[in-house]
Length: 488
Image (cartoon, rainbow, N blue to C red; front, side, top):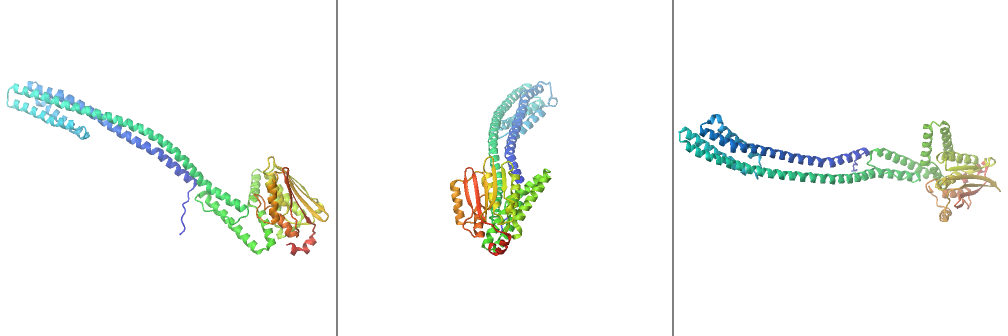
């Protein structure tokens, strides 16, 4: 079962990275805020309990003994002093605070609550003494006990306050530690976020760059004539359609080439390689791109000139399947090619064509000069700083046509020239020679095959440039027609 690939767009990838980065930065902030709010709430509740017990301490130590003294001295009653209500309120507050207090601090409150029951019992004894009309002295003795018990409860409440203050100080220290740790964590998170961002950027760049590099590599391979090259499926949504279209184009090109190769003879195969190389995807793309650019610039005359040159270029390249064309057509072919190339290399390329009209009616094997001119551009003029000049010339000499393509480019090293001559001697045909054209080896082989001669190209090269020349017999249209079977 075919594995299902999960596509992801470039924008989706960037959004994912942004979301993860936001989570990395926001999550610790939320945690630190929660912790600080937790400790702040705990600290606040502790302060409220301390304040409540502090106010309660004054009630126990001062108000309750004072109410008891007023009752004993006859200045007040149980009703108007509200001593029982006060004791009840104190009990309820102590009980409530006890429920809110942790196990480590609640013992003092528990004992204080029980002691309040003793205090209430003493108040009950005073009530019984008054009800039974016992001597005041007995009630005064109970009053002393009440004051002692109230003081004891107050000391217990004070002990609780001290414990709570100590706990609060501990919470304050903990809060400080939390803040410090949070700050340190934030610094660490920022460092991690920066690392994650850099890593994600590299990953995203690789995610985008790799399919583009594969696309570039395969299209370059296709441009060089290796039509079985294909681009592997990509996970990048934006590039998937382009990948499919390039593969489809390669399939069509390969199918057509296979059919042509199967139907051709050995000599015809060399011609088909030449035609294939001439229909160069890069050359066609760059030419069409230049036409579009000129059209957008409103240069109507230049658009017409380039379109006409391109039309002439391909019409002569195909020549309705003919192998031989007049020299005038070959001249027109390289003129169109050079006009197109000069649009791209206007500032670095100059050219001169010296092919007399007097030899224009003689026939020549087509597509011999253009590859030499192409080689001069890509391997001479283009790579030389400041550019240079290409000179194409022809002359009639003792029944032979002598052609020369000379450039003032960077030239070849002795080793490069030796290697090229060796390949031409062995007759190793290639679809491509370097980055431009189908190469000198193919032209050399075609001259030897079609003209049935041992010599092909003669190459001289040095620091001042390269000259490629060849000599072939003069042939008229009649001679070509008589020998068409042999020549084809």
